[in-house]
View 1 (cartoon, rainbow, N blue to C red):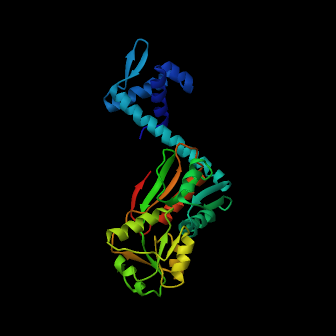
View 2: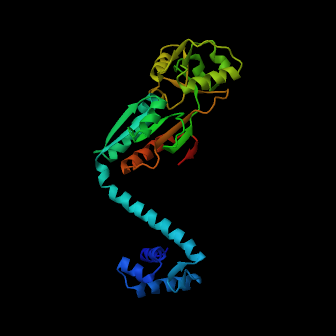
View 3: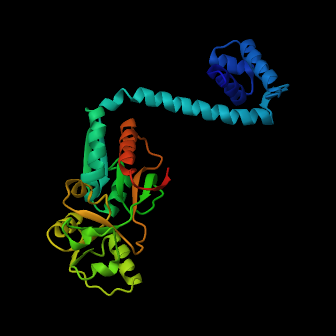
Length: 304
């Protein structure tokens, strides 16, 4: 790897078009800069600069090297800034906007792990709808957003995405809990719990039943994930949610999740943050913890 000082020499000579001017800027003797460049040209067996009467101009080989140099210097500066920020990560606040099921499962797990390492950082977890998550992050009211089927936005950077397919959610004592994969047709004799039309999963589930040729009348409609879970635990009613929605109940044995044989449309969980917006290191580290909590057992199909 090229010596870091030599990278700066070449970058400054290219920017200023002069070894003398670069030497003055860097407080280095021009002869020392020239000697280093000549040695590198000899090593590469390629001229890096054209020596013109009025200065220095990069050759095609020099332009190729400059692209590498500037990328390396930029990454180095970013790394140094991150290292310095490690001292400041001991304080401050990170706000994450998310949905109820995710808040009590993935986000709670990630937040607890993060805070054990950085006990002086405050974490604010706010539950809201998908559209409210979008607005909160766009308006800088939240540093991170985690939710299902968040609409795309030019203002948002997608940190991670996953397809978390919906499945049948029932009480562990439900007759269907004994099955590994359940056809939708076998759900119809039981009371069905549907998300109301304000929620994206309503369309996903309704479409799957329609494709299966099943005419149904759900017993319950609600816009509350918590209500769906409570109804499913209390009898023979069936909800259609993701494993992330019921992470706590799965862990405690209060609910069971079973795959559906019929195809559901994608149910995308996304971790987002503001595009081109100053991020503290704490935001990045908490995002990493959330991604780590999201990954087990799921197939990631995109990240940024």
